Length: 90
Image (tube, rainbow, N blue to C red; front, top):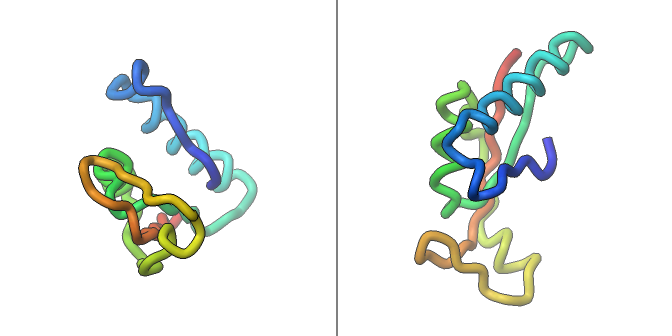
């Protein structure tokens, strides 16, 4: 999955959960066996959501954001450095 997002004013209403469930159903109907998603290590809300939906951490790309973005990215009062990849078996 690429670029899953819910605007701030609509978060915490189950929309992200429904999007992930739709993606899983869509993939299963097409005989996919795995979903993969990635997010920043400081993206606490998305990490919580993905793990609630049975995604498991599979790898961490250290310094991903430091290498691929010229400017420092701050999120949740932390510097975003690492990319976390998660997968869900279908």
